[in-house]
Length: 431
Image (cartoon, rainbow, N blue to C red; front, top):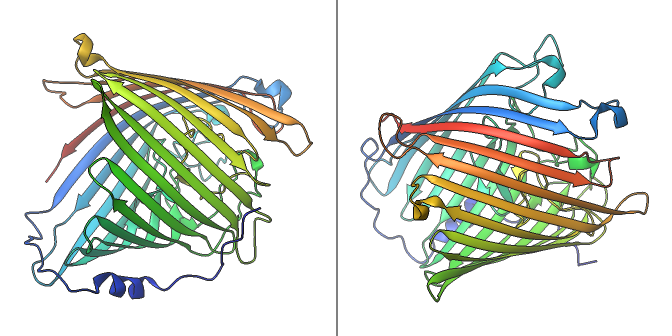
């Protein structure tokens, strides 16, 4: 077992922000609150069908299928900054989800919240919104309010109708050349199929951890160093108070080889329980690597992922784990699991069909340590077609078909799945 991370919280964000500004403040960049503002509206129609192939016969307490269709609208407004040494601005997120088709027997797909009068049914519509205040001094920004964080320790989930929103503060500073510092302090989140903000909690996929385990705030500190135009080094640490602490190190790079480009993405996590350890013992190391080679629209990728320690990798509910083998249905992050991936992408504009792209991948995992002492195995196969309209009245309309097949031998906590998602999305500027 690795040495445990200290549960003592680092300095407050304001203190780190002051440190980031040491060494002199550069003259403020020219900005205009209105001229630099933008507003985009995305209309998203999503059909979701998840068929549990083991059916209700082997799991009488579980539904055999989840199937719903819904319409979503996502408005993202971002202002510029007022002029002066200290610039001020405001951003806003507003989202609306509307039920198009659903039945009580097939609800709970993650697209819509439960109906107030019928827990098995879905609500006809729901909405959520958030406002973020922001200020900028030189090349340092502080934001407070609703946000969609996209970091190794916390990547917001956007796999259904509406994305999850997190609430708190984010400080980012690029005062030093090629070095970016980011500090985050979050206290609440609004789930993808909910209108209400709630306490941060640990994801309990396949009942790896006790469900509804909440913590205090989530805190993270991250450094990104740009070695050159091809290579990026990353380090981060943080976690959910009284639940888990986590460290991350990563290397991302690309290099021209022959007529194509090779790329590498290495990710390492070290996780332990924190403070009162509300989820019990947490002990996990996760190492993943994704290698790829791209040439004339073809991309061939190979991935490898290894879990070590007594438990699975912890991450927040409402987020996506930053793992090479996190795919459409599964994350391959069980205790002691070893997994590998093969993937192929093709941009069909090279075949004379601009706007059409194709992806398929296969991930296989084994050596999973189950609670009964057995060894678990699982695999997933994904196929995706995407077409973006190139011209005409519907230019930039995106149509996507996603299909997944997942199989496992440990049905006591996971179930076989066949899944189809049809997504139509159109995003346009309204400002």
